[in-house]
Amino acid sequence: MEKRIRERIKRVEKLEIDLLSDEKLVAEKKEIMSLIEIIQNELLRRTIMMAAFFVSFVASLIGLLSYPSPPMLFLVLISFLILLVSVVQYAQKYRSYNDLFKAADILFKN
Image 1: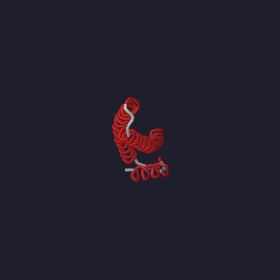
Image 2 (image 1 turned 30 degrees about the vertical axis):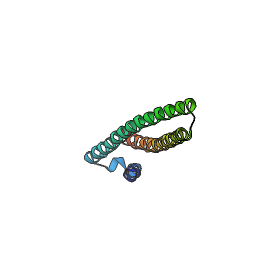
Image 3 (image 1 turned 90 degrees about the vertical axis):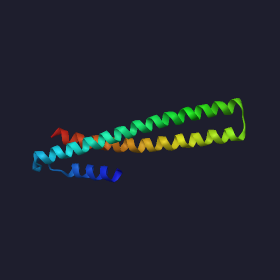
Image 4 (image 1 turned 180 degrees about the horizontal axis):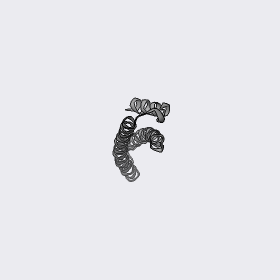
């Protein structure tokens, strides 16, 4: 998916809009809009997952504070690491989402 997005953005940046036919321009716009929709859905799914991980982290942290034990500490650390990984993945997808919007802006200006 990332490779497809990068290729599409490079292609859009190199396009000479005056030389493109209307059908090709419409096809490019449709492809970019479908990619944007896919990424939006994926970001929504990841946001929901991050919220779930955050709730599990807070619940396990409260459990650790109320009943300190090694298993609870392990649970807090695992839930924090999963939350951190999900935030990093979200940030990477969000960056590609912004790149797609830049490519869409280039196409829709012309």
